[in-house]
Image (cartoon, helix red, strand yellow):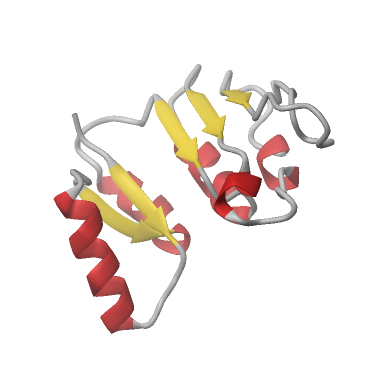
Length: 118
């Protein structure tokens, strides 16, 4: 299995530390959201069939754009990670006819929870 970890842009020393840690966990490659589309153009392993998002926002939108037709994007509850609001707007704008299924958190009491974004 091959995996690409998408991180937010960081200063070089911090990025190198995060890349090392993610590669030790099994990531094939570590990129920023801005680098993702370019990397996917030359990625020899085909389009991803599964995306996991624990952050939300624009990174989710970039991941959704590169997923294979009929792939699944799982959005984890950002509240668990200490964020007060999960910005799901960008991922609901993923290509409409891509067949990508987006599944979100199922806990009650949050406007974004229990929603299937397809």
